[in-house]
Structure formats: structure tokens, C-alpha cells
Image 1 (cartoon, rainbow, N blue to C red):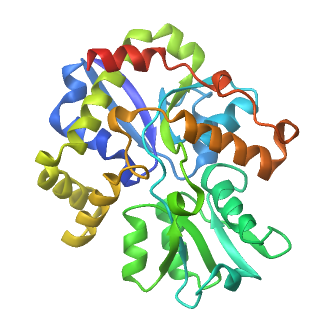
Image 2: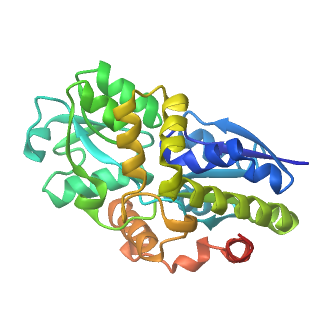
Length: 302
């Protein structure tokens, strides 16, 4: 058995990893998976080049930010389109009500924070002028902060935490997909040197992951997947079922075979160029961030 250290956020988009571990998909490939949970994206982006783990799963704008910081990382597969809701406190009825309020984010200038800022900008609201941001950690901690802190008026929250907040009286002003369109969210990224030195391990990992994603998306396994969600995220029956349905929603949920969305990734780069003013406002070619060769080989094997 070869051991791989895999770093993730504790969210439902990682159900394929959990399902694959339970079903033995990774063991079948001769892999022992050590799962690490990151508290936030800053920790994850620091940990990968430091060698604290081998593979990271997160919103892939984090990989872009890491690469732009000078680290030789590379994206190796896709996963999902975000599943986020734009969650607001009960007293908020419209985007206009967010003037003078706080937006809860993980990091100020990556991934879903940029997506939230773009959504707000498209509705006439600008950071610093119309609202401020506050760091509140990854999705789980951020959702908990929004539930407990009345000053946190809004935030991007994905399943199952969006359903938990809605059960507590918070509400959604719309899904990220409806408000923003196609978006390449969670995927896997690694250090390029590691991928070159461990190509066989990476192919085996991605083969198992693709099979696990198929397992999750197969309606024949629905009951087992809902049970797994409930056990891992301490969800009651309906919340677990709602989370599973969100994962399987075409366009905004899991991508078949953990495929990478080129259209969605162009959106990621375009938002970063606009909101951060990078690259002179013109997004670069996506290919500089990608090496999907191991994924394509794994997909053929799977």
C-alpha cells in the first residue's frame, strides 16, 4: 500500500472521497488515504508547497492564487460547480439591504469571496464603499459564525451548511449558479514536481476518485449516500436528502467523472482579473494552470 495525504475542506463536495474510502475504491488501487481537514484556504495554500500533504481539494481559484504567488502547482482534475447559496440573515430581503453590512469570507481575495464580490458588484455594491468583509474561516466555521454573529449579514455557503442555516431562519438570495453562471469550483491540485515524480500514484488516485464520483452520482446508491452524508455531517434525514439532491443537480453540482469545466474555469479567471485587477484585467490562457494528462489516463482506466 502507498500512502497519500489528501487535504480537504469538510464539506459535502468531498462525498466522493468519503464514498470511495468506504467502498474500497482507493484500497483497490493500492492506496492508503490519510485525510486532513484544513481550517481555511490560507493554511491549505501554505501546506501544499511545504510538503505537509500531497493532494489538495478546494475551489480551484485557490490553485490559481498559489501559482500566481510563485509556487509550481498544477490543477489535475475538476469536481463540482460550487453548490453555494448566497446566504443572508433573516432581516435581509434584497441585495440592496446589504449596504453598510459585513460579508463573511474565508480569505479576502480568493475563490468564493471573489465570486461573492462579483455578484455584489453586478448589483451595484462595491467593497469598501457599500459593504465590508470579515474573515470567518472555511465553510463550516463561516456558517457557524453567521449563525451566531448578527453582524455577519451575508456569505457564500454550500451544502450541507446552507441547509442548516436555512433551518435556523437565514435565507438564500439565490444560488451561485443562478447568480453567476457556470463556475469551476472544487477540484484537485498538486505540486508539479510531485506529479512528475509520482505519476503512477496520481493516476491510481484519480482512477479511484472517478469511480467514487460515479458511485455517488448513481441513483442506485442514493440511500447509501444519504446515510453517509448524515453520518459524516450529523444531518437529519431531510437535510441529508437535500444535500444529496444539491450534489446531483446538473450544472451546479458534481461534474460527471469529476470532469474539469473549461468554460467554468475561464469564468474563474475572468472574475479574478476583474475583481483583483490582475493581468491588466485580461485573464491569461487557462492552460498555464493545468495538466489534465493523468486525469485523462485515469478516466480511460476507470
